[in-house]
Image (cartoon, rainbow, N blue to C red; front, side, top):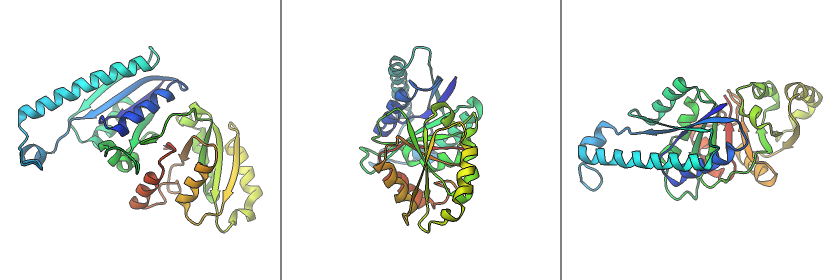
Length: 279
């Protein structure tokens, strides 16, 4: 039975990620959903006046906490009604900053998947969790599923996997029992972005490697000559029938090759497809 960890902040982005998770757990063997809320406020937030020049009193902080507890209780009840009755919904709160809270609970609870909502260009409001998607993803020791602000759940039949064929051995990670692709078992759409078409000189060797590495999956191989890797991946996902993009781990992964700024841009542009980042 799998465990999902979901940080919440009650934003529209966070709420949408929860809706997506409700659809997801109908198709995978999930036993527990952990909702994480950080109560952390920095020292300066507590002692300095706000933007309206009103200093937050201890009583106001306590009232805010009470309100959040009530929202968490209501959210738990709603999830229990929408999920299978055997799924445990656990609420965990923390006094630490969100990033540290997530790292700590991953160490303590050993969840199988971290699910995050990500703000997009048309997000109704900024999400605190959404603003931290990149540092959280980098710090997470478990796979991360990033849900764009308006993405709706569709059963994952096809996932797009961008892959540098000079580093095709990275695909071995999907055979791990810890890989969510083992639970979802979709068709794999392997995409090599190769504007110089260098794959042609080693095509048969690459095909043989893929046959060995992906023996347990059905898969298709596609090529594109886009000069821009990010837009090439996202355009392909938009034009073809895929429900998710999967990023391989390590130095040659989809996201690791980009700077912080361009990764942010890639996630922002990706307003449609959930992104699974393997570890």
